[in-house]
Image (cartoon, rainbow, N blue to C red; front, side, top):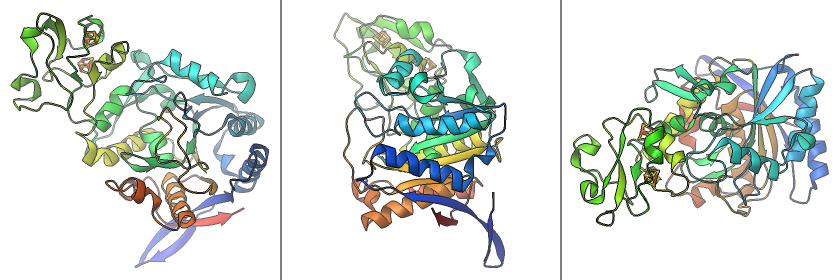
Length: 399
Ligand code: SF4
Ligand code: SF4
C-alpha cells in the first residue's frame, strides 16, 4: 500500500491513504453495495489478505431492536470478495459486559441470525467466542501505562488477517466510535471490557439479589459469598481496599433474605459473575469509575489486538446512519447527520480521523461534541497515534 511522505518540522511523517466513496441518504441498498464494491476494487485494500487463510471479520451485529449496524448485504459482498481471494471469512464479535441479547455466545449468535447474518445470506459463518471457556481467551503481555495484560478473544489473535467492518457513530463514553473502538473494546473478553470500563470490582444490587448462588459457582477465585441479609448490609470498608466507596445503586437487602456480596480484595475482575446473574441482573459494573482513562485503556487494547498483525489488517468505516449512540443501544436510534460514505484504509487512526473530519464537515459543526458534551473522542485518536497505531495525517482519495 502506497504511503505519502511529508516533511514536518524536520522529520518525515508518513501519510497513509484513506479511500472514500460518498453515500447519500437517497441511495438504495443496491446502490451502496455497488459503491462498496467499487471502493474495494479501486482501493485494493484487500491486498492484505493471503490465500488459504482465515480472515476474522470484526463485526457488531447490533443489539435487539437496533438498526444502525452495518447491513448484511454489504458484509455479503465483502465475504464474496474474500472468498474470491482464496481466503475464508469468519464474522465475529465478542460478548458484552452489559446485559442484553449479546451477553452470551448462544443468544449473541441468534441475534446475529435474526439481523440477517445467516451463512446462507452472507456467505460466511458467524463465530462468537465464549470467554467462559479459558481456551478461547488469549492474554497479550502489553506493559502499557494502563494495561499490563490484555485479555482478548483468541480467535482474533490467531486468525491470519483482521478486517474490521465498523459503523461509525457517536458514543456516550468515547465521544464517537470507529475502527479503533471496534477493535479495542470489541475484541476484548468481558474481563478485558471490565478492565477498560471500571476501576473497581462489580457490586451486588442487594434489592435485586435473590441469593440463588449462581454467581458463586462461576467465580474462579471464590470472591463471592452468600450470607443472610443482616450479614451483608451495604459494603464493608474492606470491600474497597479500606475505602468506604459505595458504588451508585448499592442498597441494603430485606432483613432475613440471603444476599451475595463480592470481596473486592479477592476479585480479579473476570466479569463471569455478571453473565451468571443474567436472570436477575443483580450484579452491576460501576461504569463511571474508569471513565477518565477509558479511551487510553481502549487504545492499549487495540494495540494488543493489532500489534502482531502488521500488514495484515484492513479497516472499513461505514459513515451511514450516523447515530448519537452505539449499536449496543436496543432501539432504532435516529440519524444525527446526513450520510457521509464509506472509508477504507490499512491505518485505523487515519480512517477514524478522516471519518471524524468528514462527519464534522457534513454537519457543519462538531456534532459529536454537541450530543456528548462531556467527552472528546479526539483524545483516543491522539493517544492511538502516540502509541504508534497509525497516523493522524492522511491523504484522502475520493473514489
Ligand atoms: S447476585 Fe445474582 S447470581 Fe448471585 S446470588 Fe444474587 S441473584 Fe444469584
Ligand atoms: S468479577 Fe470474576 S473474580 Fe470478581 S467476583 Fe465476579 S466472578 Fe469473581
